[in-house]
Length: 339
Image 1 (tube, rainbow, N blue to C red):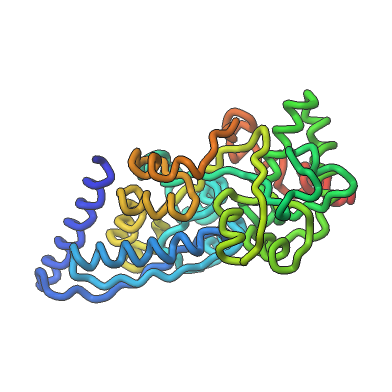
Image 2: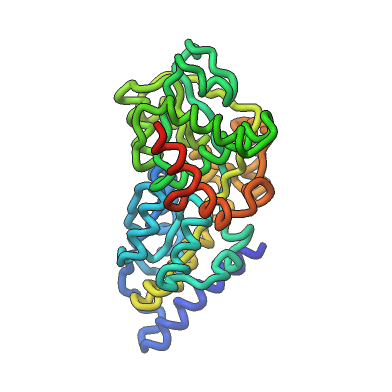
């Protein structure tokens, strides 16, 4: 399997570096990695980091510690650009990762070609979480523009998850009402029902679950299933008639790993997401495994089949979507400043 060969190659690279230093197979010095990620991956990476550290120690004898940084995906990308010493970036969308190339050349332009599946080791989608029993009778995106419904979603200027939310609602309305102009009207009404815009997806989850605001939370699929487990909140999940296939991507941050000498370990860390153990942990945390047939079969029942579209087919990719919808003065600013 390609990913197993890649992981093995990284192990060989570390062994070669150790031998070259004149200390072949001696206890290598401990290493620390920083994974800069988006909000809802906290629990996923706590378990994954422990599994990788154990596997790496067994293969190389080297102790590795992985530190985590979480926040709104766009905000996290800007932090790396401003100097946050990330070894790897596991952001919510490829558009945020592309910014690391465009603003300072932290990664190469073709970064997505370096790992399988366009450097996307897991997928997710956007669903609607409602109060237990669904007291407002919410069934689809249409219900989010009703005057009696309050919607919780984060700010798409800072949150990657919020951008997936926004685009899913836009495309639903465009297909139903027939034009971008009608979609813009629909999304404007939806955001008119949003009482507060948190900077990240986890902040919106806290607003909905702990502060008890809103009737519906537009959320990552995995985040919705954590409501009861992590926040002791009873809820129902509403799968809309149409949603977006969310494909978070991962990369080493080249400038940082080369400066710190951590490229081999950081690369192996990301490759481990594609192994059977990595894919199993992904499914366990309600992300959709993309490589392992075994993990897909094991966790398939928790992922209903949905009518999903890709951003490339509906919006022409992240660069075009960001320019038209999320740049300063683009559609979101036009919609939200008119509130």
